Image (cartoon, rainbow over all chains, first blue to last red; front, side, top):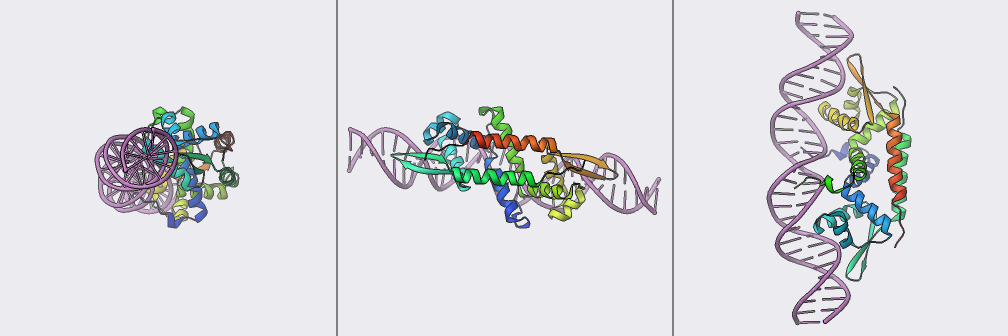
Amino acid sequence: MGITKSDIFTEQQNDLAQFFKVLGHPARVAILQYIGNQNSCICNDLVEEIGLAQATISQHLKELKSIGLLKGQIEGKSMCYCINVDRWNEIQQHLNQFFNNTKSNCC
Amino acid sequence: MGITKSDIFTEQQNDLAQFFKVLGHPARVAILQYIGNQNSCICNDLVEEIGLAQATISQHLKELKSIGLLKGQIEGKSMCYCINVDRWNEIQQHLNQFFNNTKSNCC
DNA sequence: ATTACATATCGCAATATTACGATGATAAAA
DNA sequence: TTTTATCATCGTAATATTGCGATATGTAAT
């Protein structure tokens, strides 16, 4: 099949999984780290920095935008992609809540 | 293509992405939450609890084991799958390091 | 208006993931 | 020993993801 049965899970579970999923690709991790180090960014830098085709980088940026982690501003004829710090913190908090609420000690 | 170009990323980026990826499915989130609430677990409970076929659950458990998050002990004729707390904390720490080191504030 | 540049989107091919039925392996129970 | 129960693995179908070339879109410069 290949289709994830999202309807049998809670919205919280689906959302959480979606955050993890978007972060679950090395290119997207690398993009976030690069932007984090630069404190600014234009997409073309990324193409050289990461080593994937422009179309591919653009697709990854789109996914990072889809969960609100990145915001893009038109800067002349290029784009300035930046980390949405509020959202960043919010997601970090969600993930930590998941980790903290899920600890157990049976074995 | 569909193949991730892991060779152009650092080991740290690949590992981090792998953690996120494994957690990036609602069934696996649900499995961890369920085990966390029970403080113990046998796989068959999960089949009823989650609502996926036994083969599917088994596959998800395997992926959670692959990053060391779960450990399984044979318990009579069933399995006791438990959260590996040390590994759990370790991964939580890795993810938080990533979040803390990647903050920026350009826009 | 034309050109040059930067990014987004489309369409495709290759590969990965998800899900499940069927089957295999193992261990307690009868 | 046969049966039953529990979990793992195999094989397969459906769908998703990844990556890229080609092309579209938009903006700035000439």
